[in-house]
Length: 97
Image (cartoon, rainbow, N blue to C red; front, side, top):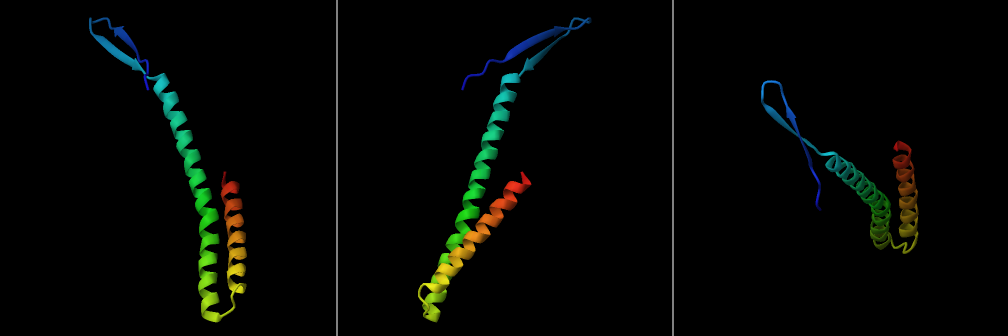
């Protein structure tokens, strides 16, 4: 990634010079990079918000079905409950935006 940096030399009355580097392009790239990371963070959170309650419900339901002998009932119930929690947390997350 190549950036063009503009240098401005300011000559003062007493003969000294100040060199000022303008980094406008770098600021724009930094803003774009932050937006990208913000979107990536949002997508990652959204993935975990969806996956964790559903997978947790499936695992816990499967475990309870093995212990109680009610093969599909607990698994399906807890997967459905996980879906409800996932949608609730997605709603809360979008509402905060």
